Image 1 (spheres, rainbow, N blue to C red):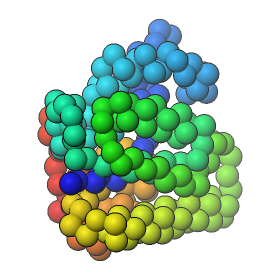
Image 2 (cartoon, rainbow, N blue to C red):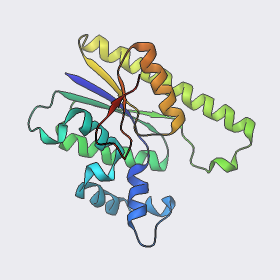
Image 3 (spheres, rainbow, N blue to C red):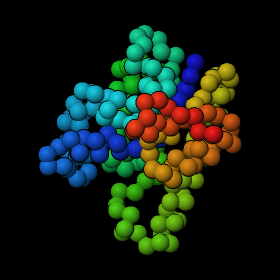
Length: 191
């Protein structure tokens, strides 16, 4: 059994926005839930960096029946994070991914330019610390439930700071950390 922990970002929303004429702002995209879902389901690998990288690593979209694949979605508790995660969760459930967990972490719904530097540092530190602690607790729980579980960390989606924390966590816990850049055809394991 494999279990992949993914940071989720907003590639699905930005890809949808870019495909519209004229290009939409993310605030407008958030009001088009059903249209975003249709866009996603039409070509999941192209629409979502998270699905593209998970499939590249596991081939799960080509397999039918029992996948022996579990996923945890780490997402910010924001309008965009919640929307993307809900769409990914429904898609993964339909694909037969079990178990499926979500870890919401602190996020920001207002533009970063609206924060003074001291507040921004405080909030970013709190959010990243919370993410790290929740993922560590989750990994410990997964290991208690299934001691021989193969856990991998997928740091393709999410913000760069989240990716850095997940990478450091993988190195500390000696778990594989992988990444798929949009121009690559395959995932790379980070050293």
